[in-house]
Length: 405
Image 1 (spheres, rainbow, N blue to C red):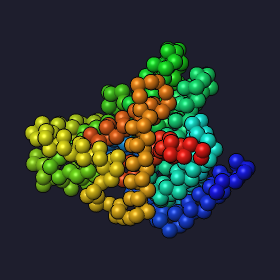
Image 2: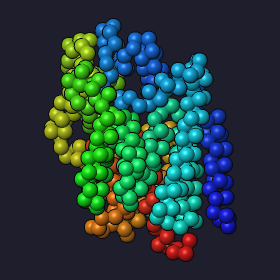
Image 3: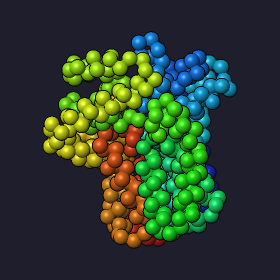
Image 4: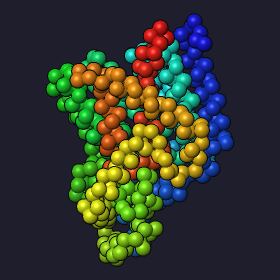
């Protein structure tokens, strides 16, 4: 039942979203910050270096992990004392971002649908079990979802009116996403290309690229000085090997940066890594070694990895039928995931044509994500990055079934 006052429904959704979020933090939230983040924080504070590991007693600069979530934790910690306070503060900030994401999600949906459908989509987003669960985790996924929704909102506004303000805000969110997920530059340039095809406004595209470069340039310069490459992250070899080796499943394999867990299965790898030594470009050289190993596996048995690639696509789009993650097959997770996947695909079939419009942009964006990430490995939380676009598309099916809604 929807209320006559259009704003009351969204206020009620947000109120119960707040309650569910607090419950999620209290009962299911992390009890400590992941050791990886704690180590990086301590190293950054004590050694004044962005690093995730020691090599032969020396800290080596990090290029594996993008920096934004670490910056987020670092800034929050500067205002606090103790990791226990840091943990609950981070969780509460993530709860705030979660609720703000719901508000922006509602605004996006109102660009396409009626108030009732917009509220329904916001309800699905706010109470999607995996989304609520993620609030209490020390993971970048809640921040990522917030930035993706913001990116989509400002992209829609820029698509409709290419004003200076819209382009700046769109570019800022794109920059932050690249600093959070290094591969996002692919989706940024895809978005700009699609925008150019529609608007034919080269000045707007160049302005967006310029603003983005200005924001990410300090970190690009840092990496260029240390590693002599212009990039935010360099972990394609690590990710490709994790998802494409004789032991890999859909979720990849537990593969540390030093590869300790898999040494028995990769003869000579340990010696090859040890021979690098504590050089400042250690991470870059390790990634090249991993990349060569992954390519060798794929070239040796291409049929196996092509089949695995399509299994990853099906897993990302629908479900992983052989997941090893705890509670993956809980009905609270699997049923909503299957429903949103099916409605998204049906909507995409009904909607897709060769016209330039926002529906087709989101369809292409959706399948580009699936196609790209399936080259590597698929973790359950990855599906949350697609939830906003799935909701946008799925509401079309509801509209088709019940036009008066």
